[in-house]
Length: 413
Image (cartoon, rainbow, N blue to C red; front, top):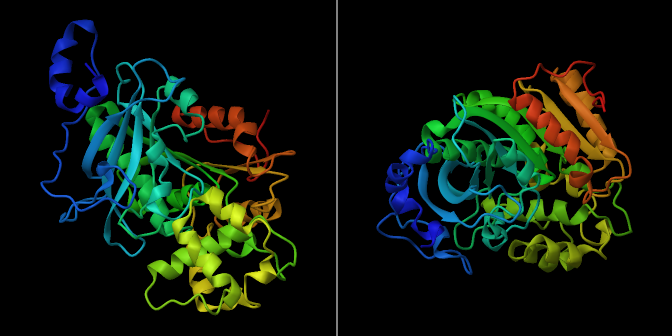
């Protein structure tokens, strides 16, 4: 028998059958599928098809879920579940979001498994780029977290509707999706999941994690956020592009243009004409149909002054997006770990240092550990900081005291 295909229907029977083999993890009853679904976005499996009609529900409420194979390297008995759940847009509208939940093997501890909710880096704007299409494989540190006894929830962010694109770098939207993934995991697992949560993310996801930490107390008071990890966080839209506009290719350009394209697509009446040069608009709007590898390759040879208008940062579309994407404008109650590669060519290290010292520490009085990793670039910093990140997460979830020392100082090694 295929345990993945049969898993949802056999939860109760399995619990009875295993009664003599140790206490099984309780899993909440399977949410029935809706009677009617619309078509999924082009190329997506039927799981991602949105219901023709769905009533608004509390953030984190499950719509459907399905068991999928676990990646290699995880402990035997680890469950991986693809989920579709309710969240809220940045304007407060109900929206359906997909993701995955990874559950450690064995019985939960008293109070339930703690949850690490992961915010992914840039994958691309269209639904074809959803990380959960690859199951749980894209999640870094996954084996270490599962072995430590952590549930891991990973959102795809909103943008599932056919023809839709993700509201890229819109911090409030991303933060809701990240926190609601933890809520979805709690509904899936029932008493086996704790309300103790740690938020972590990389690149785009680092921005999402920081905003999630800022809004968690008001948006998700049912979750007890023990810590926030932000790896290579873009502090604002402006820092992705040099000022004045350069005449040489720049690694951050494609991400700034992606954000502008997504904002214009999601905001009626918004035009890119004042921000993007006429000769570059076709190339820019194509980003709404491409995943990140294709998009980055297409912009690799383009200089900012060949794509963006002079004064683009003062245009209405850029100002609105800057307001929605900037982090560090509210306090975070939980301790924060910020990790930055010193050789990052996408997220300027100087911008991250200014974010930590001027905004998080000085303006918001947060408790921040700042780990600047020598020689690490944007693509290598996750692996380079693995030991520090996993250790820091473990300490927070184990209830260790808040990190001591001056805000923004490097961790003790």
